[in-house]
Length: 147
Image (cartoon, rainbow, N blue to C red; front, side):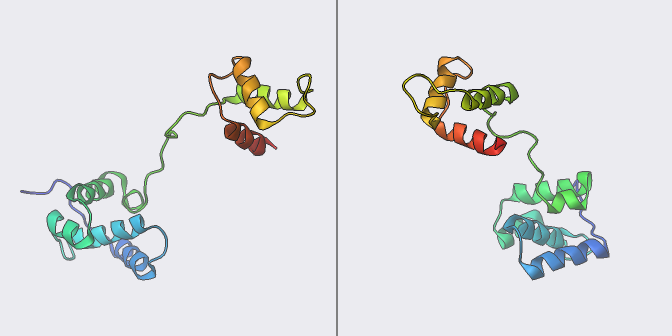
């Protein structure tokens, strides 16, 4: 079967891949991608995807994805991992919630308390219905980030 995405590396791209492998520094994913590109190069060894996946220890689909990234997005995108556009989970506190937390922290604590604790702040955020639930650790990280 003919491959849709054919890898043809320039001399400079080949040199970069060889340098990544030689240095063996950085992420192992980048090292694996460099090895895949070198093995899949039509002007070089031109190995089949199955043979590359066996030699490198990855799935055939990984090899296909690296080929596709090189052809569609360029050499840099094929060598480096694409950064995720959105975080895996949405932040609990948005800008307005953070502002209310900071204002609460700077104000006087409730009667019977000498100062604000993280647990007290978290409970107060839930009580005022700013958030549905929040842990004291999230409160700590938010206050540390804005401090």
